Amino acid sequence: MNVIRTFIHNRKRARSDSPGFNLSSTIADLAAAPRGFAAGVERRLDHGISGPEPLVATGRANGGAVTHGPNSGGYAVNEAYLEFDIPRVSDVPFARQQAVNLAKRHSDYSSLGSTDNSRVGLRWKPTRDRLIGSTWAPGITRARYF
Image (tube, rainbow, N blue to C red; front, side, top):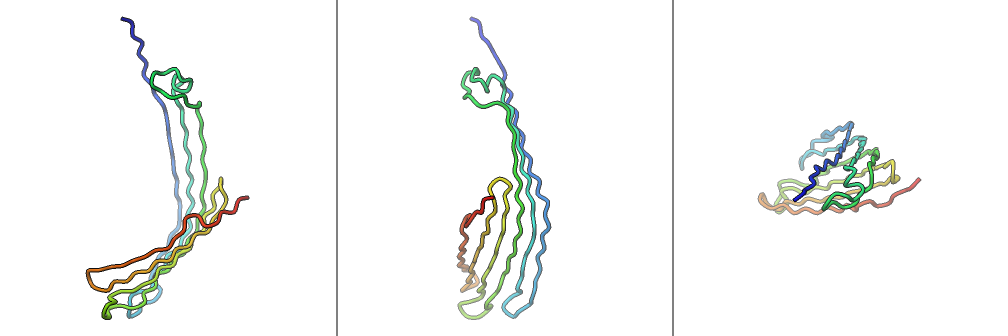
């Protein structure tokens, strides 16, 4: 019996670089708890390449689906964000902690355009062992295409 053997070697590589500058601090020490903020700018560069085996690319390998030839691509994202944590009350009956969290992020994608996203979060801790929280944060709210 004659048998033909081949060893398939697909090559893929992905790289992500994320330089950024982030700052967070307490802006006021109140009786309820410290008020804090965070801000920053970030840039993300994503790049990938795919080099399928020629037998796979042409569909001549047993059990392999036909794929396209070698390809590569990438994109960049520039982002800026600002976030505030604002405590309302602390250590009172039925409110050991109560706070609001507000955040805003601007993202600019090299391939899609830009978007602004907001988030509002609420925390209520009625007792030492119970925490109730809620967050409203839409996905991409509005993309502006160039």
